[in-house]
Length: 149
Image (cartoon, rainbow, N blue to C red; front, side, top):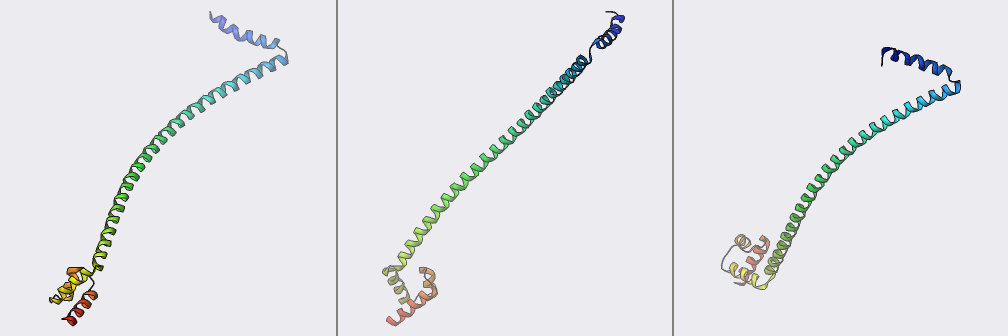
């Protein structure tokens, strides 16, 4: 191709456009506008697709982070559950021990032994401390022991 061929094209195009009727020219212009709009929409769609992909990747990262956080919380909840179970067992054991102590205190032999100790001259404060009874109980037992001896 020569330089003359490049200059000849615009002239031929202008001549061709002048030979077209107004309706044909309008159709040509509308077709070009339609092609332009179509290309614009394709580009916009590609841009939206890229944005959606990046948003999806961000959402995936957030989901992974949240799943990890849920795993940590589940692990912590499991440990707390185990601790609660251990505390419940401990409380149950303490309750049983307290019931045995209460039952032992209410046993007649227990009070007979405390009374013998009081008869041997053990004071009320020492009785309360040794036997695990209240000071008023120890005072009462000491007073009754002195009356009987």
